Length: 122
Image: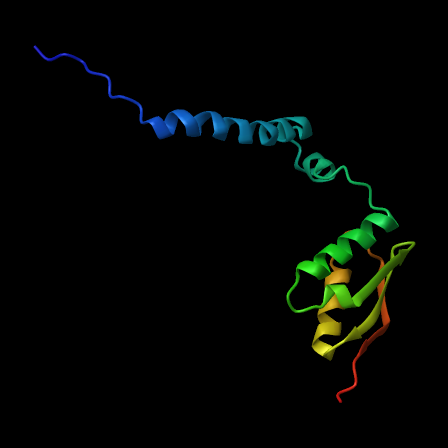
């Protein structure tokens, strides 16, 4: 006669399971709060208001983490959704990349990069 033996649960699983559940709980709550309607889920995905200050901060942050741009050399301001970029960069490619990054931010109506110039070669 064969006895049923339970296999011991690996110690790693004992620690990983509560951690995984703790991380997934906020996600499940967020999905449940939006309901099953995808349109509502998109609308409630971010409760962050899109203000000029928020846009400026987001543009500056994205410029700082992008290697192709020199975020520290670019001044960013926003008024009524219009982002103004100012500063001097090493190449036109950097100017173009910074402008594209600003345009991609939610709430940006237009980007004025006329004062974002290329340093003269010397």
